[in-house]
Image (cartoon, rainbow, N blue to C red; front, side):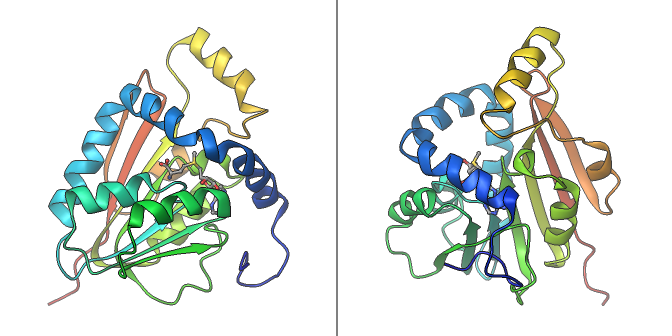
Length: 219
Ligand SMILES: C[S@@+](CC[C@H](N)C(=O)[O-])C[C@H]1O[C@@H](n2cnc3c(N)ncnc32)[C@H](O)[C@@H]1O
């Protein structure tokens, strides 16, 4: 199993979430369907972005595809893509994503640490990352690393868990964050990154979408 480009040992952070998703994988899709109803505006925005910006020739990188919700989205909304690479630390989650890929030869699902992209030499026209950042100690660093892989005029879309506006909901979710290994993402360092095109929240502030667009190549 390839977990880090620079070391055979997974980091403590990766090990924690890997153990969690080993247990969660069989239940994940059922939970995700319910969750997606709550966060529908973000789901719809991703459908629209996939339709608008993924076409023939587009190379896609996904950080933490999990059970392949965005693989399904890709085949449903933008099936003309060139190639797709997804990197997730949980083999149990990826096993489910592989089924959704239906043997499509353009789709590669790799076990690894999506926070360490040093071994990924290519650049990409579209990067997507949904619901990973709240598991990370330094989410803005991962966003920055992903942006560095964008080709000119490329798009990167992140959906992540943020502090709800409602105080009761906030307290309940804070309690669940320990066992489920997540925390609300601090939006400020992400909003300060360059080339931010769009930044919006839904579901009582719980779900935030950040879209970046790299500058076009000089003509
Ligand atoms: C909440 S799930 C999101 C899955 C999928 N993106 C979705 O929208 O349903 C979080 C995923 O992040 C993966 N993950 C957590 N830390 C990771 C890391 N450092 N590198 C790669 N994958 C990671 C987990 O294995 C899990 O599949």
